[in-house]
Image (cartoon, rainbow, N blue to C red; front, side, top):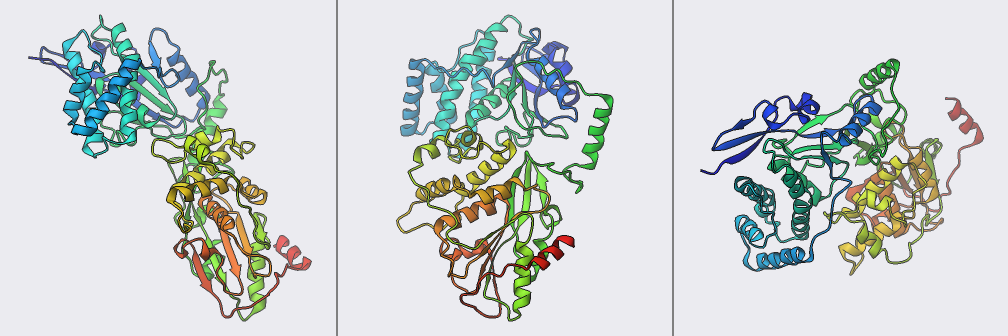
Length: 535
């Protein structure tokens, strides 16, 4: 009878995980070893966010990583990506064979074994367990019919190289100590290959600690129900920065800790009592509201958190926004101009009265675009921000990330109409190109946008004597909308402008009493401006 290995969550892992790390398997509650079965009490946790006192938390993590007695393998910063040429060629040959014969997952792993792509361990039972874990990891691709795509090929190559370069080496070190399990530490983001390698380590029975200060769950796709690893969610978040090279020395006073606790209770994501710039490191995401003409003027004056469907979740601020076009004019001109002037005479507003207000980007951004894609073939914020062509590097890091994430969404799901003979990829390249040319006035609006508070707005007045709205204008308006700004377009003649480039389902249309031609924009008088500022 071959003994089976079964990793199980160590008792008390969610509260006592640090103490459990220092215990051998036999010292942990739940350990069982019989001739037929070995239960492995395991520490597999995802530490998301940060506690109230961040400096002590990072001190603790630093001490764990550098504790020689613990022997915690810090793989996220030390992944060995080398692979011998013969192994790489063997993987390619196996993938070619799989493409022709459509192997089952069991046969695929058997052929990996045949081609010596998996380590042969001294313990035959552990050897069998390793192959069973590989089958379990790869089953995700086979079950969904995704075993012939680029993701699968990358994951296979990376699993082979990292199994040999990391897991095998750790198992060799622990070969004489059956009750010792390898320990791995992961900090920050993870690519698809890295996610599957972490799952492989967890399924094998290793202790795995995954840390993400921003609260991002890197295993949300591979272990969404926490069947293999437990989530420990801290109340705060901290912008993802490189893991400290030296031990953080700052210590918090008792008063500081108490103030942080009170602050967290009063200003939680659900409290509706938000501090200025509380969400500066969060990602803004627009939810375009559908409104009547009268509602437009009511809602646009409200702060974001007062508007319907405002929500803060998973490091993202969902911002209810206005995107409307007003055709014609009311018969009562005084009321019409009063409403426009109310919108325009606002601290966080810019008024566009000349068109075009943008310019067509030059050059082909194909290589820049390709180099910024992730495994899902979508733009990755970090890759864009770290590139030498990134235009917004002078802005605060949180704002840069917000802009980059908006660009990623806006290119992945284009709302701009395609030209004749233009492919989806060509359209994505066009949007990507234009996104690097946000006008300076709009950048200032973004910088002043405290996501839970007053929403900056762009007011466009197009009487067609002042030029024509172009495709590049429409592209920038869509990006501003994606970021969370309010947009209102006035067109007194009732002619098409934005419609030429954007489908009408993406914004509201409001038709007024009558059309008017050549109507010049009326600035508010100095007296009106003074009165508005006073009240």
